[in-house]
Image (cartoon, rainbow, N blue to C red; front, side, top):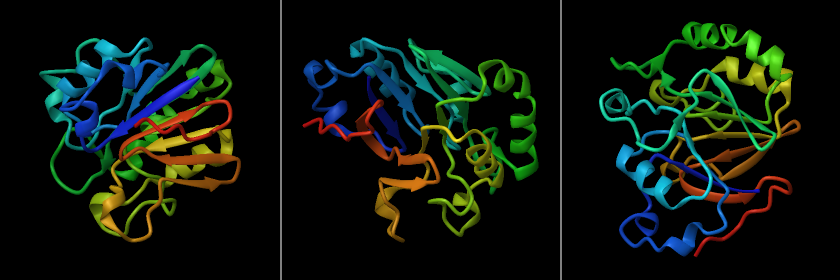
Length: 205
């Protein structure tokens, strides 16, 4: 299965200069947030599989204009062709906003998911906007990661952890991919395409 991950900035090559053949072999699109809802709806029109998304800290507008033709998986474990995807959007709270959380509130969100976690026997992909604390996050309040995400990785050991929020052009040594225990971490900034089974990156253009 080929998965396209998107986050944080709309890629001109997937919107302004889009050609349908660019998505012909994409089976699933995962959005990590902070993207124009029209962008997600546009991509959903051309993708043969679903577009799943969580909210970024700048996605308060989704309350009034959610991405059409897309599926929000906030606080859910969505299963697609046998792949279990757990969604937890938002960032660490640093200003007013409905998609910002304290560590305690994010931990409470996870606690409320105990039944689907038990019923699904964990998950294969953790999809978030923010990073995990100490794992590809930053030192400022706005980009600090969540400690409870680290605990999820330690307990459930998913195959992939996919997040946004940390732009790769920020500097500071952030990388597209890294390993944490048994989990491969993917920073979804702009876009990244890979094969689920092998983890191999797939060039799009």
